[in-house]
Structure formats: C-alpha cells, structure tokens
Image: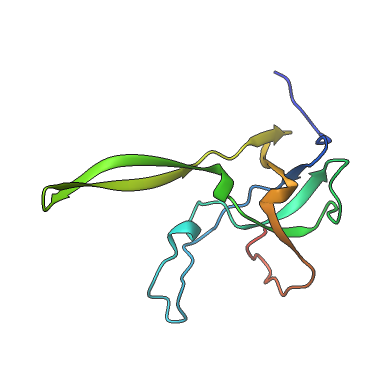
Length: 131
C-alpha cells in the first residue's frame, strides 16, 4: 500500500483539515432550529490549513479559514407531488469535495478561491470546533 506522509500542492491548491461537527448546530439563541448545513458529522465550515501551493498568497500552514463548499454541490432532482396538474420536483444537494489521505488521515484538497477569509483572531473554546 502506498502511504503518503506529506504533500505540496501545486499552484493554487490548498490542503486543509477535514473536521466535522461533533453535534448539531442551532441557528437561534433558544436552540429551536437546526441548520441543515451544520449537522453532526457534516464538514465544518472552519478548517485549519495544512499545506499551500506556490501561487497561494496570504495563507500559511496553521491558519484557520472559513470555506465555501458551494462549488462542490451536485444537485439531484426527484419528482415531487403533483399540484394543479403541475409536476413539482424536489432538488437535493450532495457535495463531492476532493480529499487526500495523508498518513491514514483524510484532508480536504481545495483551491484558494474556496476560502472566504482567514480568521485573524477568535476565542475558540477548549475542545471547540477545530479539535
């Protein structure tokens, strides 16, 4: 078996952790509404940079970044209910995000334009979202 230990992405490639949400995230202060994009087991929108390509500026290993997974969404359409003789359809999205396994651990293999911003300062609780 070929076991890759470390990589260096080319050009605008970026490798980040692939941390997932440990519990469902709520969208209201009272905790009554769940955010479907932030459910337990789903990829966290905040990740830590592991490696950057030679053409990536303003990012370095260890940076915490907010990612936009929208580019990797793949819509699937299923026929829905018929209302007033019109066939409705339900559109669901799955995400096909490129990954790479380094030394037995999965990482996201993205492009620099998938990053919305770098977190410069934050209070991250111990055992928080990026653990």
